[in-house]
Length: 376
Image (cartoon, rainbow, N blue to C red; front, side, top):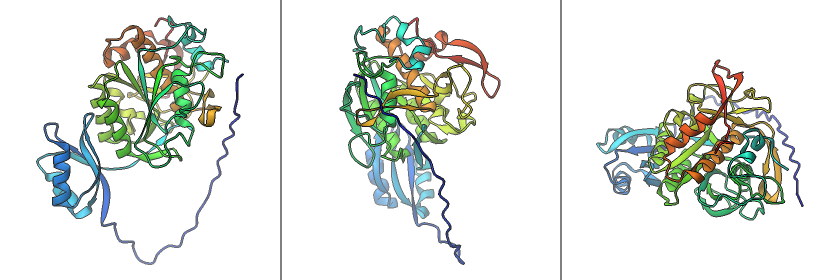
């Protein structure tokens, strides 16, 4: 029996009136930074050295997708860290947020239900591909989801207390059964990589830790989805590209600001092969008014009023490029299920070659090419 949760999202604008200080506030003595190291160095050894020499309080160290670490560093020592011979560059840490706020129409629109895998007809599951959902986590007890792992790099409970990640996971691979919804790659093995908290936000350093973990895993073929974003950050983009080098295809959300996707991360990584930055369209193949656009966008996919799984065993309808990206991640998984040795770059090429020209245009005048996977 299908269980449906009607989700009403109400937002209130709260204006806080604060007193204006008569004196300027002193600059903080230290701040959070991401230190990207040169590839040949030992990340842990350099992090330990910088902790001792520069007073860096290190919390994350990476050595797979990216060589580097994150830390709170005294502001008067940052220049010395940048000048260190082992350092490639240093950027401020920042905040990433989730980009969102029967047969789902999006799955139907891209003809996933008519693909060679016969999604949606009770024929079985995609059992030879793994999907990593880098998000708020996934509801591990949801009856419509095949969650095989939960790894957390965020604060808070080891569960999806937000709902965003569970929604994304359902679009990628909700089971093909008599309940709820069906995903693009039904029944796929889902790995919950939690990098965002219950409020749907998290530090870039936590996000990089999640990417680094995915790159270090051995389950292949594999796809990863990142329905999150923030201001452009080179370390995040480089981490995504590094993970692609370890054999993982990435689908990432273009963002919901109605602006240039190249100004956001990880959307800016879409210029690299094996990374598909995805903008959102509605049921008439028009680009959503809030969807980002630009040269970093690789594909368009359904992202308006998408019905999918949600936290606490429920279902919900959400809109956003967060909802478009998992359609592409699922499509990539479909392709990999029958082309198991395909590289991330060749997966992206296959998705682009199969896409349909809709006759509609993006905000910058580009012809929209919407995902279509019936031939997979």
